[in-house]
Image 1 (cartoon, each protein chain N blue to C red):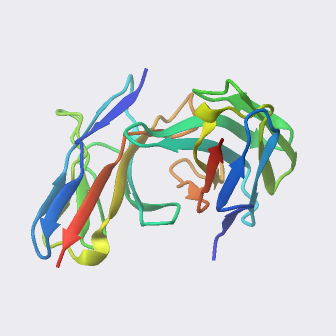
Image 2: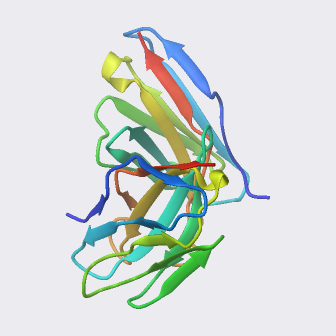
Image 3: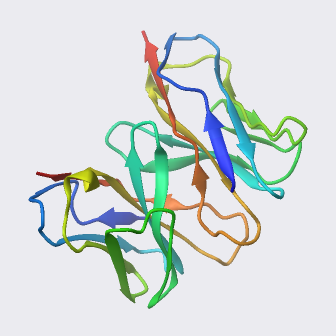
Length: 114
Length: 113
């Protein structure tokens, strides 16, 4: 059974804190993604990694960075959390071996920044 | 750029009613189209997909047909159940260039017994 796991379901942090969100997939997928989900806005891409140590900015990268040191793990980092980063964060992975393959999503981390 | 527009929700239906959730897209080429579903407290799951014009995707009683002439991919089900209550997202992916999905804003469906 394919699996994408995220380190926390709920997280509460204070403004200015450094925040790490972790994502692990067990499918040997090359591609991994971080999305942010907000009501009325759908999912917006923050960062994408197409392989180990490779990354690309998505649509809303400001205030975020990422790390992909191992193939199975993709971390999202909020260098200095702000209240406007309160949101649901979803990780996904995908193999690049076929053209029309689906993305597999984790359960999400709901982050609240106070 | 590419974009997806979905009807706003919430959509509230009684059990066994017919469902249509509208989805239209704007793209510079010929995308693959997807419907994802998010049940309460869970991540997104692929519901169905279509990769070329006139393809019909189907799964769990849901269907959607890729209409190039109207740039649409409407989700339909003939008889909804309470267990179908969820948020539904329409998405597209181009064959080249951007490797991530472009999502619509999502439509919440509530089915009452």
